[in-house]
Length: 167
Image 1 (cartoon, rainbow, N blue to C red):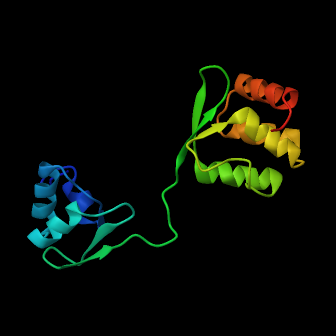
Image 2 (image 1 turned 180 degrees about the vertical axis):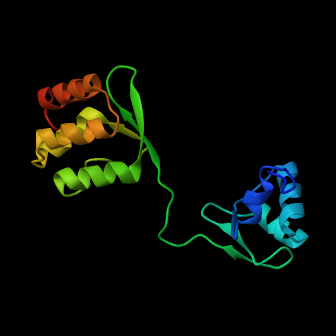
């Protein structure tokens, strides 16, 4: 945690009007927050208990004036799950689930039954599912390239998707 007294950070942090604080466990960070933003002991206990998607918002109104409240997890909002995409021998690419679902929806109109709820996606199986739904090969290729998959991984996965019958 930065100290407001640090010469180069002081002007920057003095102009911050809103501070979002997520769960902290580190004693040094907790003490620095408490000192820099006048956080009450009861608020510090609550900060240490915050769950995923929850935070404390401090609105600074001047050097000594502030308001603070806790934002609890918003129902329906979820953190993007990172998926591993198996792309050939010993090659994996990590991608956000929402990004992958958007790609699938763009090329095939639906993400149903193309990827499951797990953490791992077989690229060849996903491509086979997209082709089965009538997705254009060039659109799939372009989208996979934009996601950072290598040409080799894409070619290998396409080859497997075309050669192996859909299960």
